[in-house]
Length: 509
Image (cartoon, rainbow, N blue to C red; front, side, top):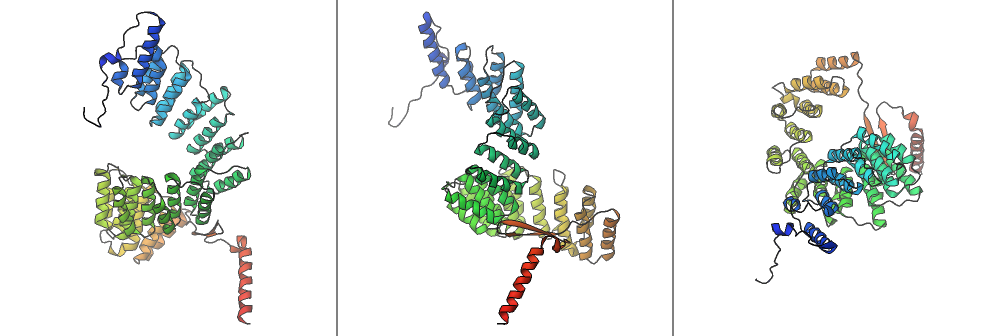
């Protein structure tokens, strides 16, 4: 045999059919050890079937089926169902494996089957099960499981309570999540992270900041997960000051900016418009995944750096990282801002036929935006009509907005067709009527514009007030069109009057 070669043992049928014990316990023990050794060498279900007849290896056999990537979960379930003395630990392994292999519904079914066999769950069963319910927002099933939790006296178990908070948050029952958290007599950092995550996921963003303050006041130090959750909240609110403070805490506490935390920082800076800071974090990261690249590409594209975004895309592929649906959204957004219609078509085609990513509604909307911004209204309209799915109001609104801008070139009557379809889909949305009225006004059709506004008045529709916001000292202040400034801004006006008087005094010196 040549140097450097390793001889591998080839398992044959004889290896999987150990000799029957001839005398005494010694042979039985020897056979048991041999079977267990062979079980560790299993590389396929075929090998497994050849040794499954030996009763004393039932537990390891079930663990192999449930936990090994080579195992067959349905076979494990059959073995458990037919076993006279199956233990709850084996069922936990099965439920966990279903949940981690993207089969949460099967995990719930396995639990129900376990209960029908009279096997009682333990404190390890419910966290796995509630996570499975959370994954598919199975609210009714989760509430029934909560009843079982109470029956078994585990409703005060902190691990079960933490997953209950996560379950309620995933099912959009934020008030139930808050009540569960508030009633806890003992909390861990995971408890705080669970309720913070529930608030952020359900857009209770200001509440998440308030909870974080309470967390610090209760003597809990935030961990990496806490920082990621807070950065997500900053991204949604556009609160750059607080995001920078979170970053400073990451540095002060000596946390390692790994892939997960780094991606959250890149996403926060990019969504808050601090593209240079996002790029700085991105290029300093030692490890990046598809979400890191996608956050950077999308951030560049959305803030006018289309060229840089499109240059980053091939570098990502050179790093042996395959793009996902967010990556292509960023690429299409870049094409839209740069007016690259042909490139947009090419990327849209490659997404499905090269990378196997089925376009979502948001990708169709991005393609309509590319055509609309280029003034190709009829082409965008035909694109919508040829979509394999029914276009949602957002897609139609994108085209209608373009018709307002390029209406003077609308010789095919696209604007009227889009207007009619959009008002069919959303007859009570005031913003649609405002867009239609503006579209008519842009091309000098004042009578039609007035008729649209009259229709709004007659049907009781009101234009949504314009809104603007400004960040001062880490706080977001919102202003609405039509608000009486005397109600909320009296102190601000007094300060401005004082500053005006001070400047006049200085100028007279």
